[in-house]
Length: 503
Image (cartoon, rainbow, N blue to C red):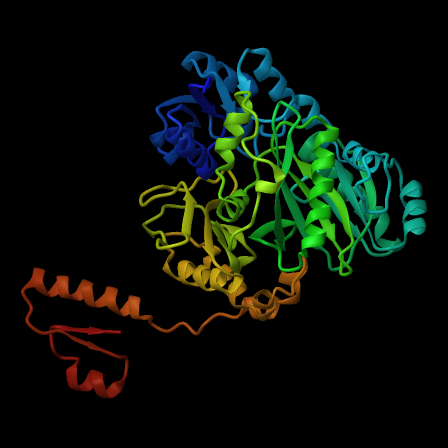
């Protein structure tokens, strides 16, 4: 292995996850960190760590020159970008290679082609991959958008050309909404990406969001590692992913997998990437976009296919050929991932950063937790609220669902609000259990998902109270203690005693 030391240009759980693989491969690691991340897990786990600036990401993790300087200073011969931040920045990939450092990812050319959604659509059309009806060039004004919308029919969706993560995207259901939605999409696109170019697509009602993982080496070999179902989304942000997809047939898997490979070959792709599709009710599929990086949900593929995708990324970046052919890839069992975020589901999912007072992560057969938080760690306000990913594997989908329910029940975090209760409801929702869901699942199941159990003391609450009072009695040398309810009779009978606690 010619790569001896890797700098991870990221933070949080993905930085720790990459470092773990590096340690298994005997590769040294370098962490970079901002002011607020001085005590973060990735800093503690790495062999070396370099401070790169203030807490805001635009002054630290997004400053290309600081990342490259840190790599040079520590003698790192490769940089892994993780996901988010600079992971799909073509200029950064180019600067890394110009500095004589290996970029663990695709070429700047491939990133540029797939990063521009309009060019990506044009490329897909050229290599025979179906796309959603719409424009292949940016639209500039309301009149042009109106003409196109009438041609392909409402509803339509306006998307940022440089977009991602749901930003710069607006649904237009009829003519009356068009002007306002166009203005909002362009404004948000400019603010998020520095580019207000947008294009228009036909809006597919009740779609499934299906993506295919691809691997490509530097020798022209490209394979896919099957699909992931990513339709459980809130505001275009994924919350739950699984593989295999409940709607997939062997024939559709083969056809979509071949389309994903064809697209990757068309841009001379290298490394791990993901081709995303929308699939309608009749199992017609349409190219959506290509993510030129590792995906958040990659662990479900690792569980079912049996490969460490980060290890494959590093081997490819080192110039090694793929060690397997498409015929070697088989799916075994079923895997589900839940994204755990520091958000309050009962308060419109508002971020809830703060100090973690206690944490117990689930364990057991078929359970994996990718996290970066620990007891005493204070979650900062500056970054994405996702703090962990909980991934399970089972021999069947039903087994995986029940294992996830058990694991979520075991996952205890105090001091902050998290999405764990909401995810527990998703796992028991009839539509999810049946595999009968699409990207509108959360809206369609809103009433069920909002239901909460009545606030009664749980067995754990009672045990915690009992343990505290046992300690209290021992410290104060009290032989008996009475815990009474707020009722007149109990208070009349016991209220005058000194060792009474009223609840």
